[in-house]
Image (tube, rainbow, N blue to C red):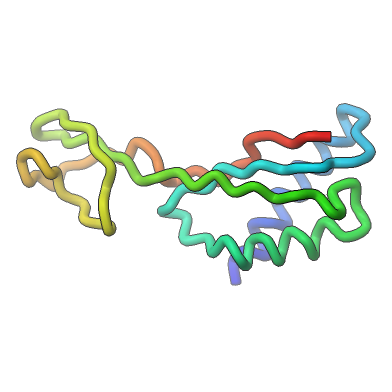
Length: 112
C-alpha cells in the first residue's frame, strides 16, 4: 500500500506549512491527484485520517481533485485526453506522445 508512504510525506509538508503560517487547525485539504499515479482514493482517505489524528489536521475534510491524463502528439501536434490508457493519437494514430498532465500528486491548498 504505497498510499501510506504518500500520505506520510504529504502530512509532513502540510504540517510544516501549517506551522510556518501559525495555523493551529486545518479544516480542509485539497489534493491534485493525476490518474497515472495509481493512487486509490479510498485508501488515501483512510491513511489521511490515520496520519491526521492528533495533529492540526485531525477531522479535516480531504478533497481529491482528479486530474485526467492529457497528451500531445509529437507527429501531428494534437492535444487530447488519453482514454482508457490508450496511448496513441486519436487524430493520426501516432504513438510519439508527450504527457501533459495526469502525473500530479500534490497539496493544492489547505483551509483553516
